[in-house]
Image (tube, rainbow, N blue to C red):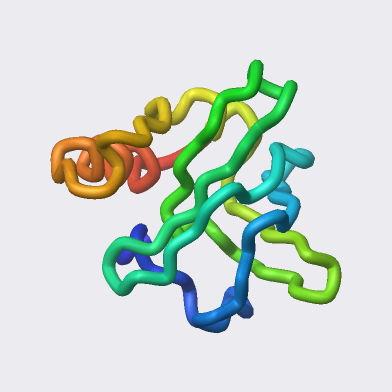
Length: 115
């Protein structure tokens, strides 16, 4: 995955689509709904509210983890398992918009080979 912070052109995402409220499906089941998203070039992402699945935790998923957007169904499919997402660096709201070290940590995690 060369550009973890960019949408795959084959994923079906078009800039300007509001993804807030879309369900997020990992490779092995639903993980929550999108609370926030960004289409910013080089820094695109979604923030997923996992609800009760992992005790209300929010997770930051770089756009490069999205393999498909189904607009009619309002679902986003990601190329990670629930366990991989659960083990990801914790979402840090105050750091995700300007802390290059935080982005490097998240990038490193999602660019490593997954099981």
